[in-house]
Length: 107
Image (cartoon, rainbow, N blue to C red):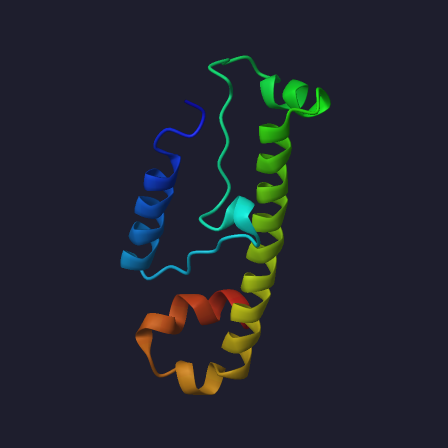
């Protein structure tokens, strides 16, 4: 089955991200509400997804839309977090938890 276990795995990854104080990011739309996942049709060859995409396979096109949406949302989220860190740097600098973050974004 093409999607056996993917949703459960993605939910577990999201739960782990939250547990580790990370910000889970998903894409937009039904294709990527939990992230971006696909399958390789039980084919381990190097270019299987490229070939399926070029063959206009529907599932592969959905996976690529999900991946592009996820990357777009991740870049937007990173920009928002960075802008917030810069705007709040004076308030955050006294909290040791934020020191590594502030060192990366404020130089």
